[in-house]
Image 1 (tube, rainbow, N blue to C red):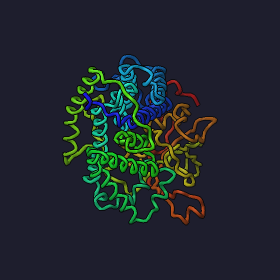
Image 2: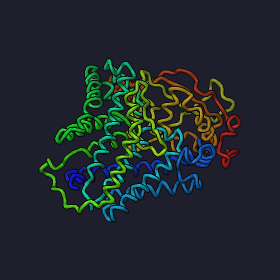
Image 3: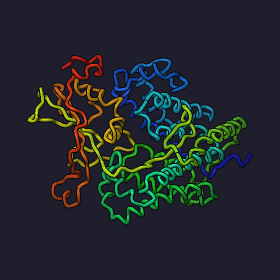
Image 4: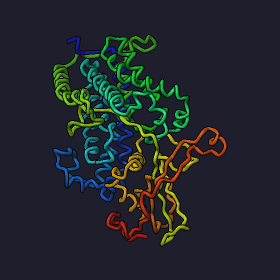
Amino acid sequence: MDWFAAPEYWLAREVCQSLIAALYVIAFVAAARQFRALIGEHGMLPVPRHLARAGFRRSPSLFHWRYSDRLFAGVSWTGALLSAALAAGADDLVPPAAAIALWLLLWALYLSIVNVGQTWYAFGWESLLLEAGFLAAFLGNGDLAPPVLGMWLLRWLLFRVEFGAGLIKWRGDACWRELTCLYYHHETQPMPGPLSWFFHHLPRPLHRVEAAANHAVQLVVPFGLFLPQPGATVAALLITVTQLWLVLSGNFAWLNWLTIALALSAVDTTRLSALPAPPSFGDQPLWYQGLLAALTALVLALSWWPVRNLISPRQRMNFSFNRLHLVNAYGAFGSVNRIRYEIVVEGTTEFPPDRHTRWHPYGFKGKPGELRRMPRQFAPYHLRLDWLMWFAAISPDYARPWFAPFVARLLVNDPDTLRLLRHNPFPDRPPACVRARLYRYRFTHPRQLRSDGAWWERTPVREYLPPVTIEDLAHLAPRHRRGRQ
């Protein structure tokens, strides 16, 4: 069946699959480097405790069979190596059926991590990576021409990502309809990047143009993905440009790069004369055609829930309707904060503390802290603790399950927790007390940045956590480190 093959998308498939695999490398490496303090056996939200509450049907994961930190590390590094091999083209060295199996193994390994990651993995880009990786498994390899159905399924995913994000904004915060959200967003987003200060200080009319362009690209352009070429290519490139703008303006883990990968899958490169012509491919086997037909039927059936969500006035943002994270609902920033709050965590060796006590702040890698420290670029790498600290500053309810265990680990100088931080002011022995204070942070004006090098200014708001000692939180400290002072 000639209609089943789309050789004109051979390069688009290669780029899309390679980018998705590369992002899996980053996701697995981030899991391997951060899990011990977050969800390890002695972590803030231990996986074994989660598994005792959640059965396999509720959170499918190979860790229901057995859990240990060594096994989790093995799964993470195995996933990183496998995804690196796929990014380098290892799937072209094996038969098509084996290539599909490798991609599905990659998906299953990361699904096992996400489904035990709890609040640390409750981000839309986790589900997006899983869904994109699952679909990429069925795009074939160098032996087969890209399948028409598989490429269209990627466009359907991209449409839901963009149109869902556009609708959640239009229905949500009034500032999106008034075109004023970007007066605040660059300053109050979860983790500003090195250019966010400059984006914030763009003229306000340009901020309104940004907001209007966002509505156009997310509410109108996605329909262009279903137009005949070159219309779909134009729509895909417009989405790509918008995502690159977001890459420059902030740190959103791999969300933007994954969206770019999906957009590039819709680009018809045969219209670019500078690129080589498509290679010759073998005939599509019947089993492969049947598999793609079954996959398409599955996606269409599961699409009932996200489509119903899209047309609902009570639209959910970043929601999975099944535990396999397939055919999900997406969206971002349905509301925008007008004020930025930051939690500053401090410790002291003095006990008992009084009004003359000297407190020393802990330094985080990504979230704002030191006033003269320029925001850093970490995306597509994901700093999970730093992101959750942003939520914690908005409301203590976000942090209730893990913030006290986090402080308890600071009180015993837990090395796994300290590896998540940039600076530990107590390298020789743990602090006697730790406290947390809430501040309002603002970007400085250009004149202040030039005069004293400060990117931020802040004013105290209130006490977030009163001074506590290890005796207060001993029940939350890692058992193997209690009493080590």
